[in-house]
Amino acid sequence: MDLLAWLRPWEFSPSLVLAFLLSAVLFVRGRRVHSVGKIRQVLFWVGWILLYLSLHTRLDYYAERMFFIHRLQHLVLHHLGPLLIMGAYPGQVMRAGLPLRWRVRLAQARQSGWVHTLEHLSTHRILVPFLFVLLVLVWLQPTVQFYSMLDWRIYRFMNWSVVISGVLYWNLILDRRPRPPAALSPGGRVFSPVFTMVPQMVAGAVIAFTGHDLYPVFDLCGRALPGISALDDQVLGGLIMWVPAGLIEAFGLMYALGTLMRLSSKGRLPPPRRRVPRAAAHVAS
Image 1 (spheres, rainbow, N blue to C red):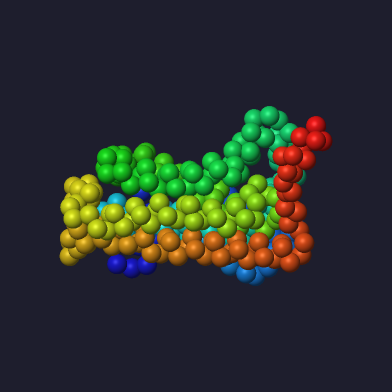
Image 2: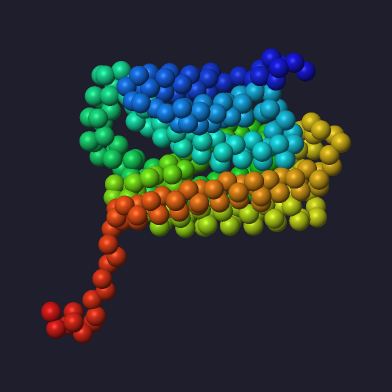
């Protein structure tokens, strides 16, 4: 099969193509306003390309018919792609790529109550990590997985949900600022990957060591690689969740630890709270 056949979408999605084109145009236009280093540009475009290849090429056909390829797809959609893109810190760049009147309208909209609430929820230090883990575990439930692989609407919602949750999560973890203005404290960014990594690794281990086929839907659809049995496919998928996904989260932890040390060396961390003894507090009152 030639390269063009691999790049041809398995199921064409105009909305997905429009979203990718819009994000690319905004980033290119924004570079004319903000100085974006080579490394940040490489991170953005590599992440952008990986997301597109995972969502809108022939790979999607194999992801619907092999469990381990499906897990590789979600490794990119949930972990690697969003990590690379948010590592480029594209927010201000893409906002600068908007036409002036759109930027004015965006600034006005941010003053309204519902937009402020939406921004608060999308950067919530508890809700975002919780959704990051929950959406992985929910879509792995055999019954949920069965219907999501058979209904294209649920399938697309599943893929977009893990992409969005990944972008929101890595936006929190890769933030280089102290809190405030960052939504999550530097210490919280170090510990958060631990709490999000463990459930996913446990789920991967359970899948890998289960002795029966948890996902018969792939046999129902017809396995794209008949040389791999259902149990071997399942073991490979569990290992992908267990090892590569854990390594990516470990990288996030180390990056957050480096940010914590950098802020500490520059004296930008808030001073520790002093605990007032009860007796002293009673006298003062």
